[in-house]
Structure formats: C-alpha cells, structure tokens
Image (cartoon, rainbow, N blue to C red; front, side, top):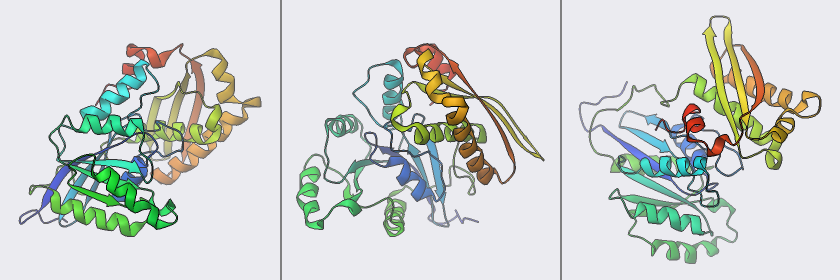
Amino acid sequence: MTDQSTGFRSGMIAVAGRPNVGKSTLVNALVGEKVSIVTPKPQTTRHRALGIFTDAQAQLVFVDTPGVHRSRKDALNRALNRTAAGALPDSDMVLFVIEALRWTDEDQDVLGMLKRVTVPVTLLVNKVDKVVPRERLLPFLEEVTARHDFVEVIPLSALRARDMDRLRENLKARMPEGPALFPEHQRTDRGPAFHAAETVREKLMYRLRQELPYGVAVEIESFADGPEGVDISAIIWVARKGQKAIVIGRGGAELKAVGTAARRELESRYGKKVMLRLWVKVRENWADSEADLKRFGYFEA
C-alpha cells in the first residue's frame, strides 16, 4: 500500500512523437504491463490510452498518444493528430520521443506542436542500442539539443530495463506532490473490451503486414465475462469490398490465424477461456467519415 501522507508525488506525462519511434513500447516498459499494442506498422496507436505506474513514492500516469502523421489527409488522420495534440496541455510533462540518428519532417511537426504549449518537455532519444559505433550518437545529440529548450535530453533504449528504471526515478522526482490519481493497482484507464478490440487489430497488423489495408477498424459487438470464460463477438471493418478477401484469406486461413493468435493472448490476459468470433464487413471509406469515426471511438478523448 502506498503511503501518501508525506511527500507522495503524482502527475500526468504525455508521450508524443511521430509514428514508429517506440512510444507504446516505452509506455509498456515503464508501466511493466502491456497497455498499448505494438507493431512495426505506422500509426498502430490510434486511441489515447493511459498507462499507470505506482509505487510507494509516486504515481506516474503516462498518456500514450497516436503518432503525429502528415502523409495522409483523411478524417482519421486529422482525428489522430487532434488526439495527440489534445493530450499535451493537461499534462505535467511531455516526453518527446525520437529515434536515434533520425530527424524527419514529422519530428519537426511534433516539435512545432510542443512549442505551442507551456508544458516542460524532456527529449527521449530512443533506440540507441542500435547505434554502432556509439560515437555516432554524440553529434546527433548536440544537434537535437539545440532545437529547443528541453528540460533534459536522455538517450536510452525502451528495451533495456536499466534505462527504464533510471527514467522512472527521473520522472518521479519531477512530478508535483499530491495524492494518487488512480487506485494503486490500476494499470490503465481502458477496459477489457477495448483491449480485446486492440488485440485483434494487433494480430491483424502482424499477420498481414504490407497487405493490411490502412482502413481497418475493429468493433466489439458483444462482450460477456462470466465464470466459465469470456465470450466476445467482434467485427473487422474494411473500407472497400476488395479488402475483405485480403483479411479473410484463402479458405478463411488469415482470419482463422488472426482469431487464434488474439484468443490465446486474451486468455493469458484474462486468465480464463475465451470464445472469440470474428466477422469481416465493408463500410465504404469509413476512415474519411466523421460519423463512422465517432462510432468507432476516435473522438472519445
């Protein structure tokens, strides 16, 4: 149990950056539990989700945001960029995540967004474990440090536990004094149905990779959690008729493989049997329809 009577600290920490810099991997590692799905495909994260770490000294509430993306101009992309920007003003700190040895136009877009808020920003240079030889990192760090008045610039790897331990200690010291914002055993603000939908989408992205259409959404039609297990029905929405066959696969092979992988992970997460039924349906150009985006939960944050 946390002792919040003397010197306990708590705060909201927004995690911002372009797609594929490792924001969700970072949040999962800092929380110590999978709260966001992770794939190699850009814009895997589509919803604002909280990851919560609590110990005897502090509670750190990480806001995992979608990657800021400029290449697409549909309603979905605009909604994701608004979600990312909306998380910043209410935070106590922003972690701006970039990839070691890479600075892109989209990184510059994120920095421009951060300069419009008064929240202190720490720059995290991720994936330094991939830099060989290590001496290549120093001039890059000097270059990015000069781009903004960052609170601190920290090179790290989200895959190294010791880096995550040091970062947590750093962040705890920077949070304001105050009581916990969430119960100490809570790890996320999202419920099991949300994680079921995200798990199905993650398995789709891993299974189909380049073949997976951008316009794919997963909607939970029913979710029943009982003593015998969890019964889930979900719809995989695609934006065009030709995409349905890609997701289903020859003889239903792709859909079956996705369902099996998702069910196994959900059983491990819930600690009980899962019955998962998946259907694939077409909703023409849903990614450019504000009404459909609201239906699929893209304006809830």
